[in-house]
Image (cartoon, rainbow, N blue to C red; front, side):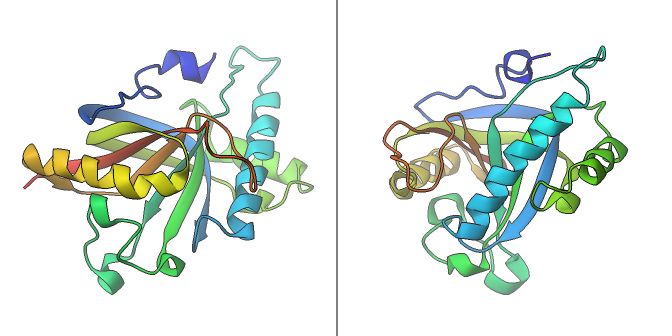
Length: 204
């Protein structure tokens, strides 16, 4: 089972803002906090790729073999501390040291917490092995678009998504979600990146 082919709509976005419906999805994931540019962030990103590979290997010779490597990140702030942060202001109005995130890779629903704990026990050589957990999330109605190029350019792209949401009588209602269709590592050029920017919304 190739998850990226099975869930084509989930991994597809236009260069123009659009409204989509996202159903429940399951992930292997790890939590973190602080700026997404830190060494800790990149270490967890590298570790989840290795852990996901080990998880897939544990199903390789069964009827439930699966593949999928796209790394996704859910970002949020503690609103009790910083207040409501809208789509267009997400990276510009609050100190990123207060940012919280969940790095994730989508997995089939049949993969359980026990499967993840078993792989963690067998692969303690993978950094943060014991910190990986199953995460399930239903985004529902979202606004999204495909951002091309460096992450810094999102400071111009997210306000476009914000304006689209407002024009359609919608407001941000959950975690900011980024799907990294092209893998990247620290220090690499970001010119070729393709990132789906997706935010759950509700009526104003």
